Image (cartoon, rainbow, N blue to C red):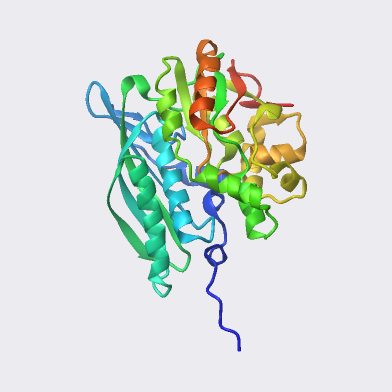
Length: 348
């Protein structure tokens, strides 16, 4: 008589990682009638779909606040905790900030083995410590589907606040991590991902954007920034372009990709979030690339890289420094232009 095997974490949930987010269409319907109170100190709030709220606390300092949590994206609890924490901390780095404190957000079935939850929290705590922030508490809920993430408070100053609404016409666009985590996670769940693809995706998702943010802070002509997560490179690019009243041109051939992503996309191995992203953002982009490449560009990322908007005069030096410091595939992937018929134009 065989023993019952314990459930894999990813078997306990319907969707994995950032692919579990409400689609941008559903979310916009919920938020459109929300009445917001004016506040002079609130520099960035809901209006620009930015990565974190920015609240001025004095003439120099700006408080940053964000939260992010999602269901397991891998079966290893410790690794899941690392990925979820890295993803949440990324919002602060995308604004040009430094994380200060973090609080755990936990949903977990009380009947399950508590050692699993301990390992999830240990993974998150290790990443919080690596970021130089302090864990100060949290909140938990009994839920049949496990979920984990963080509420993070950070700080920056007026000179280094880089919202997605700050991009300027003519800016070059630098992406600091390769794309394709959503597709590879789908392949992992289906048992068809290669070890190379799996290892590369996990390394990418557990790498803090801390160093990228610190390097970005060395350059005076960095203007805008966003991190690439559930709404995809294309979706977050559209949000940046629209918030800055510009258009974004992406060069598909220049976008760095995780190993095996092209082949998986051509096989149709893509998460449901890809289709939600393409449907919602469809009116805002035009493309001259294949359907498989479009799927990659609208693939929901978990703990993706930074998309940095920088003046042409500093773009080459910034890219060179990022390549040295990050030791990963980062690339110049496009530019911002005056407003055209679409917010995003995808070229070969």
